[in-house]
Amino acid sequence: MFEREGVTYEFHHMGIPTCEPREGERYSAASRMYTSDADCALLRVQYHRFEAGSPLAELMRTVPHAAFKVSDLAKAIQGRTVLLGPYEPIDGFRVAVIQDGEAPVELIETSLTDEQIWGRAKSGARASIYRRD
Image (cartoon, rainbow, N blue to C red; front, side, top):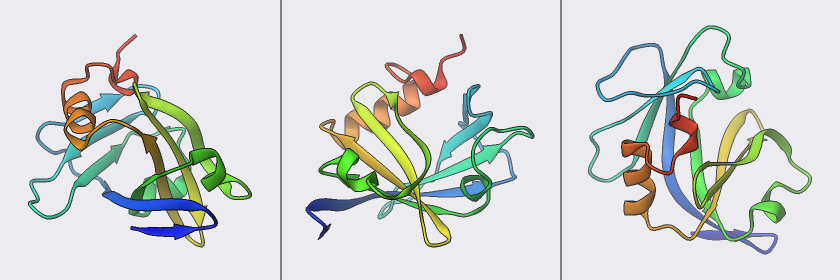
């Protein structure tokens, strides 16, 4: 955990772009993206596979990203190049992706526990990002 300009940052997970289909993928129609979770003990890792025509920024589709929980999302993105959001892909879980140098960085503001976050993401319950409307 660290603090910058009055915002606390706590590491949350890594996101890694992939071209390979993986077991347990969840699909986001809005992002034209599949997400799956790695079987890691020390580190949460998500793999993201993108369809042709995904509207997400090329940097997000091609470069791995670190994700941090932040104490104040609005303050954390102030003056930054915002690639995505802020938006709420999972109820109670606000996200923005910024560009930091040549890397995308996901910033998360939530009061949910990790169990609630990962449970909602895996089940699709209360997770609008994975709805098929």
